[in-house]
Length: 155
Image 1: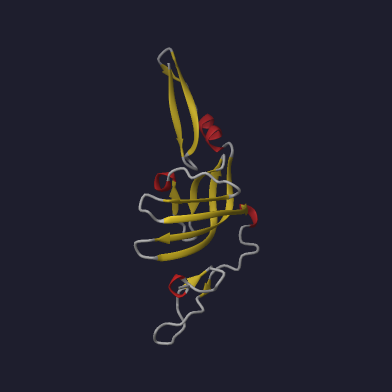
Image 2 (image 1 turned 45 degrees about the vertical axis):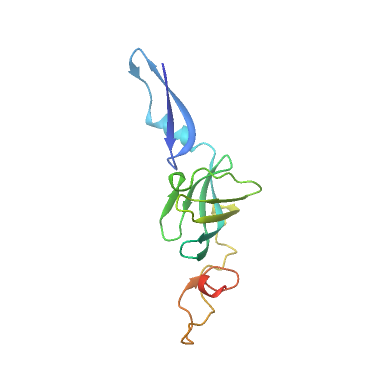
């Protein structure tokens, strides 16, 4: 009898394992699950554009993503948070790009830049927005957008 088992992300690699049950005894080791689940996963540096139509907020990020067989598995956000397949499904990359909406209709455009090891080498990171508030003061928002303006000042 065979039971199909789906690995869970970083933990969820989408690699289907077949667990054989012989003579009523389940034979499987943690090591075989870890090896099967990690095979083929690659961490990339990625540029992400995020737009929330409900709030009309746009955000740009450079961060890392976990990919397996051109399918996005995880987004590792700069603040330490993580989004997984449960949040956005299984978007597929074509020519190192993908776009999709998550369950809350937030829209994403992701472009793979390079392997993780030198992710921030040519990236200047976040800068203070160059826009001005209604009071004439410098905006306090931080942005990584090429225009050096945050979502509120790019319109």
